[in-house]
Image (cartoon, rainbow, N blue to C red; front, side, top):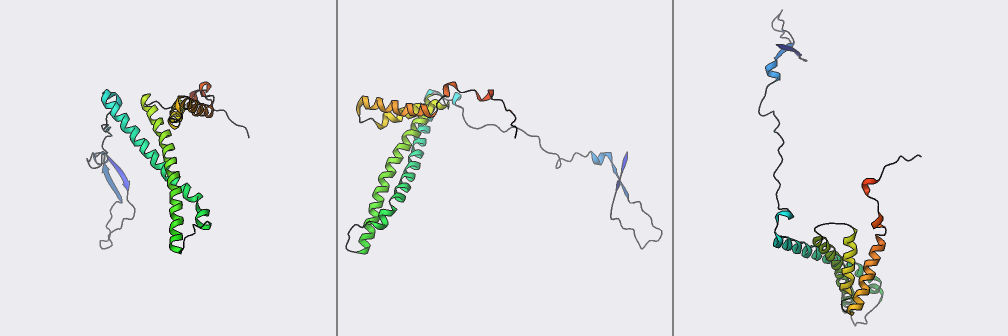
Length: 210
């Protein structure tokens, strides 16, 4: 069976008088239903998933994976806090760098002394901020690993409690206990009402009239 297909822009031959040719081509059903391998889209096949799940790891493997995750996260948090503390220390020391002298005999020694002074302050700030960031971030990841990868508000509360104990490690048991209660309690207040928080799946969208 043939289907007529109109062809536009056909030019008749002027050299042959009386020559007529239909401006309609015929396309067969076989042509329309051609199954050329180059025109057929390949079927979508799910790619095999790579990697190993936690369930496939043994006890030793889980411990090693958790230790690596904690170490990497703690290092990254320390670097982030170090850079932030150094930058903040430098910015806050700009007025002293520009206007407070060090009473050096030459301009070169004066300039060098001012920059060394600023660097000392910025480095001290960087170490402090790096330690704080590493403590909170590292304990947060450690709590998550210990709890089997679960992430909720309790991770922040427990990690803050552990960080408080770490910061007060030189103050004895009582100081460590006070710091734990202070840091953990403060984080609990920040996440206040979490024990009575409604399930997000129970929220119902209601129209708002303007």
